[in-house]
Amino acid sequence: MTDDDRGHGPGDGPGAGYEQVWLDDFRSGRNTDWWSAYHGDPKGLAGTARWNRANLVADPSGTGSLRFETTIGPDGVVESAGTSSARALDAVPALRRPYGTWGFRYRVDADDGSVGHVVLLYRKGGGWPPEIDVVEDGGGDRQSVAATIHWRDPRLPPARQHQQRRLGVLRADFTTWQTVWLTLGPRLVRVEVAGQSVEWDGVRANGVDDSALVFPSEPLWLGVQTHRKRGTPVPATLPTLEVDWVGKWVPRAP
Image 1 (cartoon, rainbow, N blue to C red):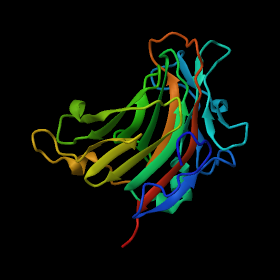
Image 2: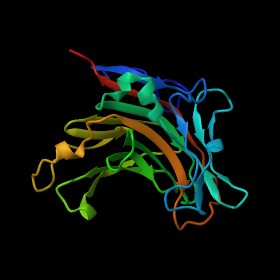
Image 3: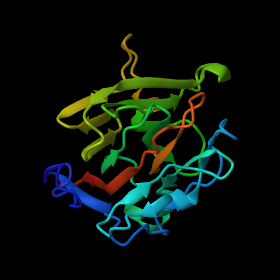
Image 4: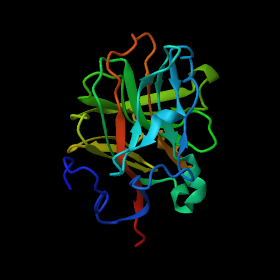
């Protein structure tokens, strides 16, 4: 499958040695047993940005995608969409395995730099960090995304416990369909797209191995969200993000 071919599944997934434990191609719309819709104000952005569950819609053409639309509310607030797969952790027991490879195929319209997007992994039950921002940008021409991992170091004073590391920047035309893979293991986080990859093994530049702290060993859900950034003008263009499919694979038993 090429990323010009809209509406197909992930084929063999991340490759030999993996088995698929979950896949949603949205051909039947949003499965509410798996996906919730965000509704309310993003933290710190009340009066500026709002998530509206009505902005999360199945592709009206019926070809199978989930659309995250941007609109202007009647009060002038920029409304966008978000979703979490936390419910799927209860519905699909195999998803609770902490490690494996997540894949998704998506695209997002360019805009004037006001509406950003992120696809992330987050712990079930809340509590931050950990968090893995698989792809993230702040809007604009959608020609690059950043990948970042956040964790907590309990050895430090409370005000300094939040730690983060940018894995790198990945460049592609995200206004066209792109397939992204995130692999997480006890000593690895790796993000791949368009023949590029960024990764880290948890060893700091000073040689200290923090992998036991860095990499979550607990069930994680996948979230997708868009919202207006703080301090930006009301967008002149209203971008839509589309997700074609989302899945998870785990190493095949020997």
